[in-house]
Length: 407
Image (cartoon, rainbow, N blue to C red; front, side):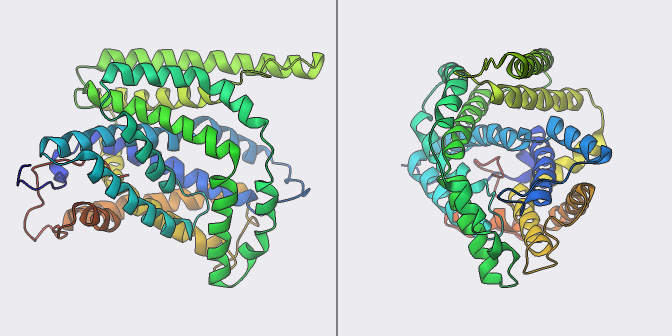
């Protein structure tokens, strides 16, 4: 084994488009997570308030642009980062499985802390599925892509089968809502931890469907890194365009299928999705359309200021994500302002946008003075088990090897 040490990559050597895409995805995560609070404590047989015109428009736009598109995009980028990290660690002569296993175990610790403030935490899933990805880390890009397609074709059948599994997880969650309204910090933390357990850890739809979708996205990102897709984006512009138009076409076709299904179901009681439900196909097609659309604009030299802002916040995805959740904990829960579901729908979007925009400016300032976001810095040190310079005035950040992902 070589005596050369493994260290994170310097900010100057990161792939800019990947950080930019993370920044965009983080916007969707913040907006949709905050919107969740608009009906967070509406349980049992309580009817949801009938939306007004503005709410309907905002809900429609959020559903089309952001809902489920952000975590799937981040999952694909995680797969890309997985490939980058393991490739560089392996080049240094270290065991990539042992290194990445340790890294994911530390991510579980960070995820637990995040779960104390937000029951919808995604970090635990990245940590778990990151370990699952180790089963495939030796795959070449082509077989990884083929496996991705096979799982994608199986996904609609899995969704139907999982839907038949009986579950009481949501009913157990409903019993926890009084903890959410409590003015006790401990009770609020208890709510988020238990809600995570019932709604995400043991809920069949989440346990099987969401994790399978994540694996598909991981494999897609893994294959993309293998062919240097993001590193050679300008040279791949024609493929970016093709993926954009094909994914748009698939999304539109699926919309037509969904409309036809609704008509057949209401008029003739025919369920065309009884055995094969391609709902996630629409989400993934839309996500690819948005991803390649952003890439297309990026390589065309459009919206440079916008992309620079996205890139800065994307370099601190983990820190900013956790801060967003801590803010929502004290704004909506009983331990803080206790706004709960009391506010109009637009308020949750406006607050999420305000938090995100403030993070854009704070991230830009922070990265002028520091090499990493604070949570990223802690995670890197735990992963590499060595002291890394935080301040830019300290010894220059290492540039020798391997890490290009924030999550």
